[in-house]
Length: 169
Image 1: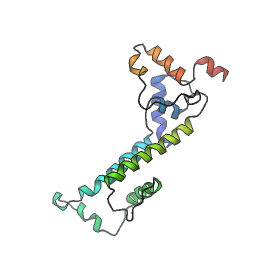
Image 2: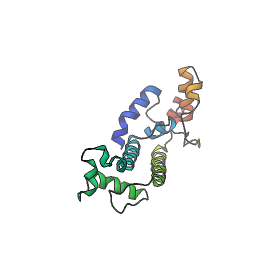
Image 3: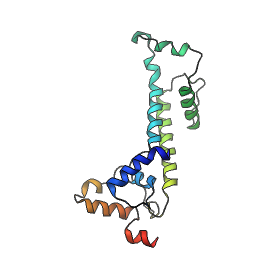
Image 4: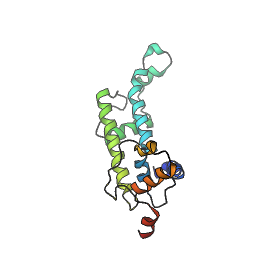
């Protein structure tokens, strides 16, 4: 996960100009960006939930024969294990996920992502160190402040990363 997010965090550091003391997860939280691992799991679970609707024989092809196969793919087993970790167990990895359970699973996945991100983001240069709750969406100052230097100063203040604060520790 850390290696996947390195490119995203490097990009966010480049466009915001924050010092290295700011943890990558803190920067992601401040800019309301989910980790790539979370995005991949969310999309995989949504795809897994929509897969049974594509198994209609009228659509043609051989995909509708998949549930009859006794082989369970590694991907299906991996998704089933993740769903079990999130509190939803399937009797058979090929069974469909009900739509009401899908929302619960996605909320639990988001909560797990938030928990792991806040744990890794607690450093000196973080809004969490100042007791500022992380934003639910992109903070308004990113669009309300027209001058880039003001946006950067406000971001550094929220992240407790002004140069004097960084030097004094």
